[in-house]
Length: 259
Image (cartoon, rainbow, N blue to C red):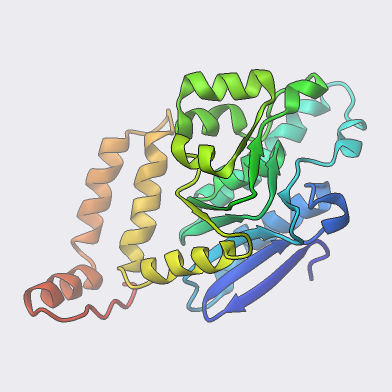
C-alpha cells in the first residue's frame, strides 16, 4: 500500500516511519501523498486508535528536508500550488483527532522541521538537529514553517533561525519550547509511546476537543475562546463526562467509552 512509509500498529499506537534512509528521509511527492492518504483516510479506519508517532528510518535523520530535485522542476506559478499542497497535508496532521507525536531521531531540517512542528508534541533524541535552511536555496519555508516556528518559540528567535539558516541542537530546542522532551538516542519512539499511553487513559472525546480548541487559537478565521466555550458545552453532554465526574467522586478509575 505504501512505498515510502512503514506502518506499525502497536496495540492502537501507530508508528509511521518515513522510510527513505538513503535520501535521509527527504520529503518527495510520493511521501507527501502517502502521508495525506494515511492521515485523511486510512488512519480514520483504525479501530481503537490511541495516537500516531512520526519518526524516520535510520539513525541519522528524522527528515532532512524536502527533495530538492523536485524543487528544480517547479515552473512559473506552480510554486504556490506546490507549497499549498504541503500546507494541506500538514494541516491534516495538525488537526488529526488523536495525538500525533514526532519522535525526532536526527536531522529535522526544512520540510522535516515543518513536519515535526505539525505534530501536537515533539520528542527529540540527544543528537537531533533542527533548522529551517531554505534561505540557503533562495526560498523560504513553504510548508508552514514561517508560521508554526513563531508560534512555538516566539518571533525573535524564529526570524533569526529562518534568516541565518542556523541549526540548533536538541537541548536548545527544548529550552526554546520547540520540543518538550530530550531522550537518549534510540529512545525517541519509546518516550513518544509513553506519552500517548498516558493520554489514552483520558477521555478521548475531550482529547479531540482540546486539539480543536488549541488549533482555533492560531486560526485567524476562528474565535479561540468561542471554540473553547462550545467544546466545553459539547463535552458536558457526553457519557464520558458523566463517567469521568462519577469516577472522580467515587474515587475510582474512569472507564471512558469515547462517547
